[in-house]
Amino acid sequence: MNIDELNALARAIVSQQKGILAADESGPTIKKRFDAISLASTEENRRRYREILFTTDGVEQYLGGVILYEETLRQSSKDGVPFPELLARRSIIPGIKVDKGTKPLALHPGEKITEGLDGLRERLTEYQQMGAKFAKWRAVIEIDERDIPTRSGVRANMHALARYAALCQELGIVPIVEPEVLMDGAHGITRCEEVTSRVLGALFDELDAQHVAFEGMLLKPNMVIPGMKCPQQANVQQVADATLRCLRRYVPAAVPGIVFLSGGQSAEDATDHLNAMNRTGPHPWQLSFSYGRALQAPVIATWQGQENQSGKAQQAFFLRCRLNGLAREGKYERSMEKDAE
Ligand code: 13P
Image (cartoon, rainbow, N blue to C red; front, side, top):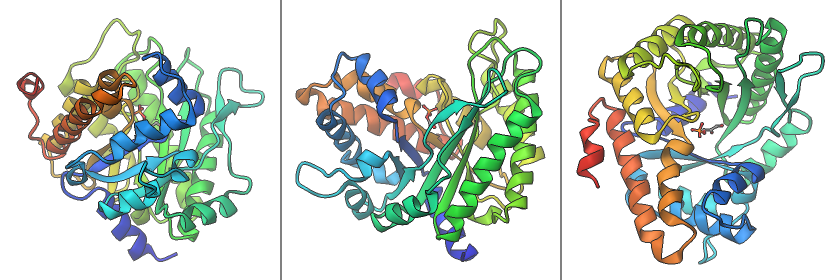
């Protein structure tokens, strides 16, 4: 492991104005997105859709990296350029989701564990040969009642994340470490902060125990936000304050970048929250985005699977990239959404 090289790569991904497009939806997840526009989730439709994203003019100014799903890593543009190469030519660093999704955690009703460690060294080696320079693993923590997540449920998930991160760094791949505390449920913002704090505390303990270099990774956390069914929703400043308080307490300054997931927030809220956090810098880490839905929902809604809507879909994608690029510098205003219509 060369920490300086890992650090340089991580920094490049979150350099000025830049963040990450998470385009690594698994088969069932992309099917759900396509179902919403009544489009069959065939391999060719998935390829066509990803090509729209990856060939949008100008997004290279705002995207340091794209996370691909394994199928997409192996696909090419209609002109026959493999997607990882197409992205690299545009100076967008290709990455790969490597976890195998979640299963119920044994003897822990209501909790999940992410699988995929067996054979991971070999899979990472193959993905690296295909052009992937960074990877992603997502752990899922649900909040339910007072006793979920349990201490052992959190530990098991953070241990797996740390084992994954160590394997990546051994091979010179930057790990994106994603412990997602879900927005589902009726819990308030204080409970989300308490659980996110516990999760991040346990995570950095495990990463340290597995000898992971904090300088050579990116953290992909949730923002601290009330559950979607909570009657008491928070305003933008409350989310920014709670998230920053939690990160300052639990994320070492050696971590070069924090790239938030959007987790079911609207595209506008995700941008606004990121902007509010960046307005109060400087922070020890770059605060950026690694959004899936918050970058893509308007694109899919515009595209509708129609060839003649591809240009409009690309405009919608460029707009989200540009506004999040502005939010990286605390220069976004909600009124820009209207001006762009
Ligand atoms: P969302 O931004 O839609 O939460 O997706 C990000 C991601 O990569 C989840 O693993």
